[in-house]
Image 1: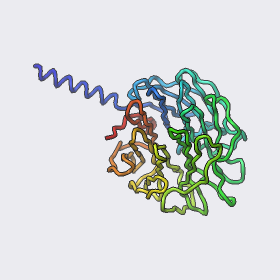
Image 2: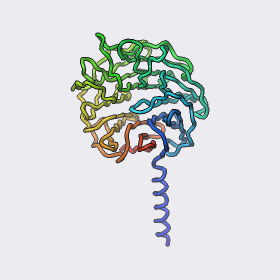
Image 3: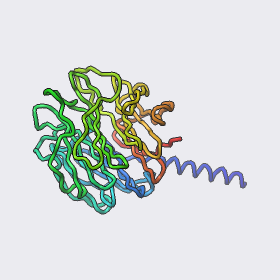
Image 4: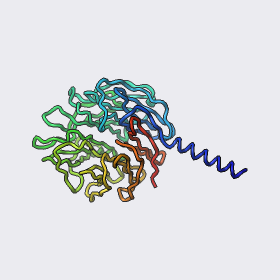
Length: 351
């Protein structure tokens, strides 16, 4: 009898864990994740013309009902054109594209929101809809986007010190030389290091080569260093792959991932690139000396850990447009992705 009760208890606990292993939010798209130093997690997503945010107090195992942040008639969704979100010191900020880049701010943990506050200082210059958002260790925000105020697409940014209510004059992270352009439909990425240095990554289109580039802005500097190409190979393409890759900060620099000709690569500057295998839409997260990469492969998602040295394994048989979040206070990682017409948020175990 005792053995039977023990078996039943184990089965119940296993079923409970399985039920809590993932959160599914229906009628949602393009999820992005953020966490604060205490381990509170937020997920933002689009639903039709609306931007929503849901909050988790248990490190992403469960989420409270989503809060509608705003309804934007021309909200841009799809192919990485969803909202972005960051959290720091009691404030939560998100950005969303609807003709212009709009910011929204919450000072009560994502329950109530103010905005929109326009980020781009030239109307309609951010209309391509692809952007990135990052928060520094001291709470400063940087937003970056593909900007169309000139004859060619370039990469611009702005900063905020009040959680997104006001933004600095826009300035370029990078201008392609000689009348060239950055890749017109690939999203940029931003990441702050623990010391306050800022890394920016984007896909270029110099001479028809659709290769990933990056630049670093040291802590305390107002200017980005000269840009440099990532990886060893090159990809000549007469179209935009609509796949910008991602960057994450490590204690000794950055780690970046991208796809080239349908294969996913990982690299650090001055180190050889590593071929992770076939796929697209890679994302990367790093914390506690561990690196995790997730990407699309066929109809599902695959993952690997350890700077690309680990074996690639299936994460889910159905999923696309993944997002990753490291939660140092919880000692783990979260993944969010689209599955059908819903989004899924789940813990990712890393050895």
